[in-house]
Amino acid sequence: MAHSPHSPHLHRPTRRSLLLAGAAVPAAALLTGCGDDGGGEGKGDGTLHMGIAVANISLNFAAEMVSGAKSAAAHAGGVDFKAVGPPNTDGPAEAQLFQNLTTTAKDGVVLENLDPPIFVRPAAQAIERGVPVVALDTAPLDGSKVTFYVGNDNYDMGATLAEEALKRLPADPAGTVVVGVPNPGTPVLDSRAEGIRETFAAKAPGIKVLGPFQTYSDPAQNYGAWLAQVHANPGALAFLGVGDADSYNLGRIKTKEKGAYLVAGADVDVKTLEYVKSGANFCTVDPEHFLKGYIATAVLIDTVRKGGELPDGWFRMPGLVVDSSNVDEIIARQKSGEAAYRWYKPQIDDLLAHRDAHMRPLKDER
Image (cartoon, rainbow, N blue to C red; front, side, top):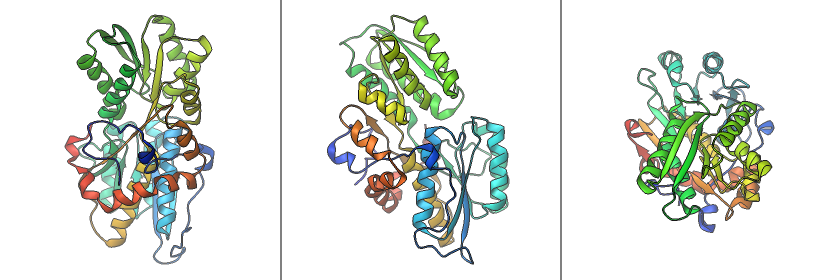
């Protein structure tokens, strides 16, 4: 059993659902190579050469995807798997790393990025050379020749964050909510912000949404951007971010300044989970990046080994609300890649066994 692909919103955590989801690991533990653990064919004939490219290999969201991808490769066996990505969010630098990777990982590459336009040509060129490419977390653009995408319903994630805020505000609230986006123009992040804005407009018309303002992905820049917004809007009801650094920096600011406003964001960096546990952040929405990385890589390996074609469409992935009711279990999930895999395994098995039930037309992704 997995999260329903037909549910309009992220599932509320229950003891049962907790046993069927989740995982991440500290970034420092994820950046090693992946050989043939798990009973593979060895480094001789039959070894697949594959890899993953991510937008920022030092941030938690990418580290989780790398961990999930490497876990899938290790469990498949017989896969020489490499991970590449710049230390800071830098689209052109990642594009070069991706191009280099496709010359050695000739059996397939999983591509996550935050700047889709600059990957159209490199992805198309790789596919023309016969290198299968799976889009992860950010949908491919027309012209890239990438037809298979594994990612969340990000509009829904934003809507869920707004709904969780409304549960903690008075009935018929009136005031302002400030929204921040680390990288404006990144479709997945913009979709989350749109979900926040439209949900407040529909369910709490007394709330005026300010932004989204650029908050930057660099943690230090992000902190400064949010501090400026908090000081500029001292009477705001809530400050909501849609990225990784947003979550823990908002928690840090609220704790330091003893703010009465609500704060929350996305992802499950260890610092974010500490702020959820302390009550500074009322929740975080977890895109379950480990799970996405695992599924994308597992489908790629299985397809290549069977000599088939990658699926055509959007593999819609679930997400999880993390709050005081389940944060301890999520903290335990984050301790190691193995803990992550054990926690996700029932869900992994179900998703891979029922792929068609989770597929949507690529044009419907949001």
